Image (cartoon, rainbow, N blue to C red; front, side, top):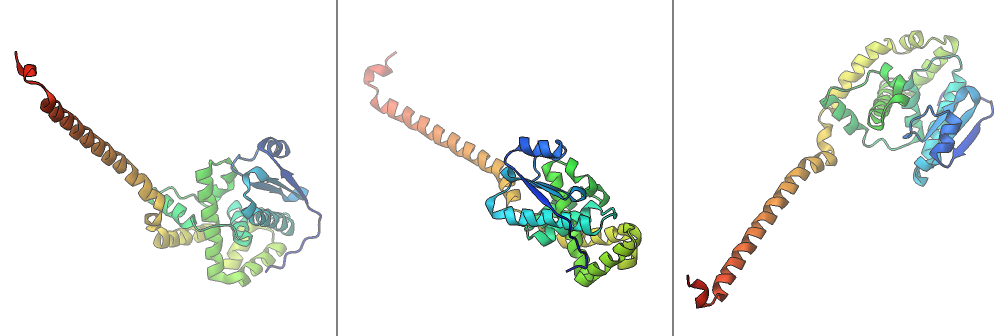
Length: 244
């Protein structure tokens, strides 16, 4: 897939709870995280309490990619969006809701710049999901336009010239900020209406109406019950009950 190589050993730590995870990561990783990789130390730390059995393989692939990329491009300051986007892509993890996440951000004008993704480990879960979604879609867009051959060429350039911006421009004919503008235009054209496909949107929109409808029905039923009781009371009253 690429020309990068690595041979250093790698240690993987499995943490059974948040306390162990915080101890090994010095409490610097958010609680929503499933793992973290320190390529410079050859270490992967997994928070197994956050990982479903069915996703263990994809989470491990995700972190192994970070380790492999960090080792293969040692000395290169890799932007988080590219690091995370490629990791999501090669891991095979679920991305089916990413288009809805991005569509909501387009609707609320809350897209993150690619530079902002660098701070993903400081984000709350919802914002972090947007960061991962944008990162994945940005890398996917790169590959759709330049194919894996273009990515391999980019890596080869980076190995010779470990300057991200210069290598990006040489490989793709534009700098990262020009790419971001084109990419955001693509997102707007392709995903701006996808939020309408989100079942949760209709659920939360309809829920207040359903509650109101249930309230009205109950009130009507109660009123009918009271009216029936009043009619039954009149029917069973004796003549003396009407004397004054």
